[in-house]
Image (cartoon, rainbow, N blue to C red; front, side, top):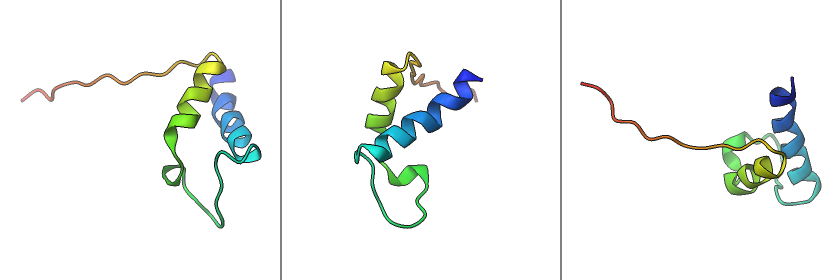
Length: 56
């Protein structure tokens, strides 16, 4: 349950602090991802990217 709750909590904090802002209905791609990803680390939810080649 914690993994499900941490993402909206982080997003709401960024909105409340004014880090993210906008008018109307905006999708997640409308916001800068770096503040979100940095905040995930502070909540103890590390993230990473793994590049892989496509097998032919």
